[in-house]
Image (cartoon, rainbow, N blue to C red; front, top):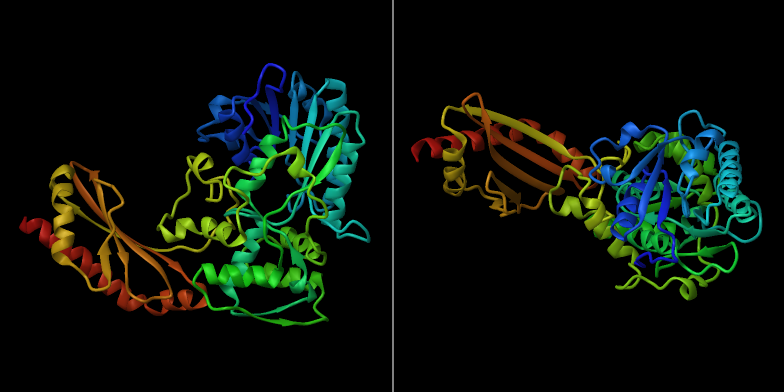
Length: 455
């Protein structure tokens, strides 16, 4: 990443800092040495974000020019990362985005902003577009035609946990071994890893820009949408999905169907589905002459999916803001509640009068003594708990963590079983094994307590 110097921009404004890309971009800009200001309609959403005390927070809305005047003051670069698609109160998102773009263009020009960086979408160069793609293209056009130099990046499907496009692939593939699809399942897509689009966004602040224009960006793979779902299935350990193409299945009907079988809001799923009627591939690679590729090269689609599913492989049930610096493909607390895969949990505990340190010293030996077929101790470096990973052949990934916690002058020994189901079979297995699971989980905790008492 280019570190700012005396002649380069030093103060940047990130709109959409509580959103998917903004929440991952802001800490990277801070680490690169920029002074960062963020625009938020509800600054309260930044509560608990570890980098919030390192940024200036401006309360404002792209639909309100007055609030933008103070937010844009003394700013060198504006990152335009806000989209109204699927937002409550923005049913006519195209009109809302047009008004927002016009406001940003006008206030940026009046405020003397040095550059606008906007993320649009890959789309065909000719022909009619879906409302979603048409709106994003219009926003780019409004900004490019403004007096402020504008750097527009055009990307397709962004792959990473929390990305709406990736979550739709995840939910559809996990839930439907056989699916009926419109013809767009054979359309060509050029996906890009979230860490690669963040690279291009960060570098766009200082990259040479002789004149305002668009730049296509994408990953190394061009695939059909159906191929993307089956590659996801392969990485996730699922069988290949069968797809029955129905010419009469319109995008609108498909959008309604996705709203029924996945947790995604219909207002978001509908425009995404409508946009899949078109190929989303790069038409030019001029970006290579302006911004170098990431040091390790562009990330393949398969590797992007693997990174997005990393938390399932490692049994992590909670996301943290610390992941913004280490792994942008990981989920974050700010991601929507419909993002991510289902995790089933069975939590039970018992109170022990002994003080916690004594229990912790005995816990690992007690778990070793109990043993259990199909489980092995997974040393994750914790000194307060012991984690076991399931080694049996089951349709999913399972972990058990036993943790000693201080409680009422003694110790509460908690046993938590987390199960990440793999496809429909995993969900059926969880509910079908309910009676046996309850018995075995209770016996495991009782046996560990007995071993601790003996010690």
